[in-house]
Length: 533
Image (cartoon, rainbow, N blue to C red; front, side, top):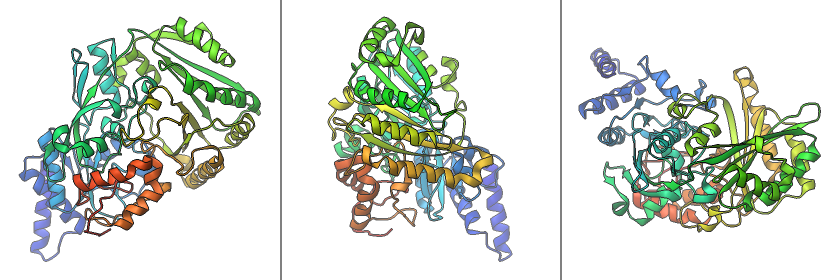
């Protein structure tokens, strides 16, 4: 890729000799690439390179951000080492380029590889920084931020059948973004979030300094564990606490199809069961939109850190309406269950970054603090049955989620929250012209749900990014912020994601990145006197 940069520089030089300046974009790319090359970073791609489009699109899982109206970066850098990563950050700063750091490409709103207001930017893609080192003796692991959740699970599973890590079910999700936003998963009712199990981290600051837990300070270490990605610097690697699990766990998925009233009853009952089961139990609900011949579908997914006999005994007593039988249950190792819940055929597939299908989609989220009545649940199911292609996912809280204090990490949705809701719609290439209709329906359903969910603020999960809540609207690659910018961020999306923790996040940002070098449409704004937006 170095030859591309050299060629671009030569073209610019020849044009300048003929008094015809390079375009701004070409000159920016050339200057940036010159900085990289002079600092020993050779693994990058420019818009003129044949590899550029493939690299850019390789980790974009929401195809909304592959459309022609989405501006691409001036370069894509794929650091091979921590020093490469530092140098890429410093070169971007020196050339006044915004920095977008991508660990897996699953940002729901594309914030790890797009920019707003036509601000020139580079993508620093951490794909090659994916090493995981497990120490079974201390039950810890160091994982680079470019590793996927699946790569972490595979490494842990190979090291021990009795160790695990509590994170999400999507195997291709990048650890960097996932942990930065909290990281809810099937083990969270027993062991908390991924962010609750971070012991240390290596954070690269805007000036290229590498900080560990002690040198970054309490506020910044607190902030990076759930305060959202793209605000603090770049977490190069995480030290993770591994958790004990039985040699065999129980996994199941039960699907049901029937009339609205039947499912209203099941969903109503689940609200009283799912969040109150023993910590070892995870039981979620997935419901696709639409109906067939007046019937709707629903499925329950479960993982139990116990034998299937114990799982069946407890669930038969607490949720007999589910109709669970022994044939629904399977015992397997924890790592085998992660492959199952990721929709994979084998454990080896956990390390395959290309397994998850791509789609055009839009998502939103909510939290429920009081059970919804059966009558209202029926109305919700009826509304769902009229929708375009999409779904809702209900994840139970309670257990360890309720025992961690709401201010122990930036993630505030703890005691008092029964479950989260994720809403989504998706469409294919043939329906792109009707995308706004799909998104509009989702918005109307979200408004319909307002009476039934949390209020003041109406809460949301930062890992399910939703720009409908509000945006920062930065117009420069970096620069200070203002009290007005902080207030707007707080009232629009800040309190929804972080509740009363937002103020401490602003203080941490002001310490870690007062110049707002690391920013995006929903990054934490600093509060300082350089009030430029």
